[in-house]
Amino acid sequence: MNPTLASWNAAAANAAFDAMIACCGARRWALAMIGLRPIASVVALSQAADEVWSNMEEADWMEAFASHPRIGERKAAHATAKSAEWSRQEQVSATSAAQRVLDELAAGIALYEKRFGFTYIVCATGKTAEEMLAILNRRLARDRATELREAVEQQRQIMQIRLGKWLVE
Image 1 (cartoon, rainbow, N blue to C red):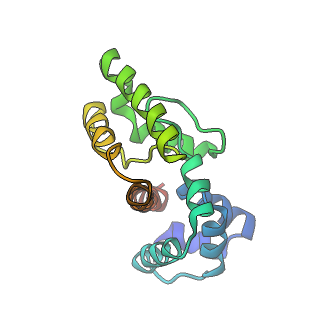
Image 2: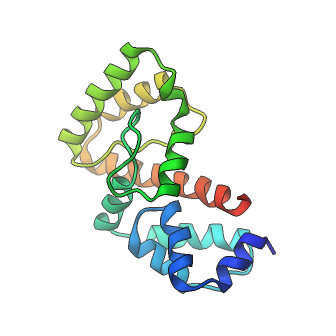
């Protein structure tokens, strides 16, 4: 068994919660995950994470989205230190983007938040700022229901990447 997973299975509830909330900022998701302990394998953890996420509701999604900083920003108001560190790694391309691209991202994100009522969520890992801007512009044309489903999927992808990072730290 993965040593991080084994330690988490045996950890006190507050420590186990802290590990999960860094991977996904929805408290109900994190509590449900610790309620499933012990989890036997990395594969089972990944499957459980997706299953629990699929049972979340809009309030949970909004809480998770709020734990992410806007693209190009340092830290979200509700992010844990670990989550903020991972966000910086995931958004590293935004730090070296041309000012024009950053300005367009900022303007597009403001429009997105006004239109949809939640933070623009994109799985930024491996994407350039220009790619994230193109994705944002494409997603701005959607209706709220379609975009909410996309944001939920993007959050799921981020959660899975973060679980993987957590397991190897």
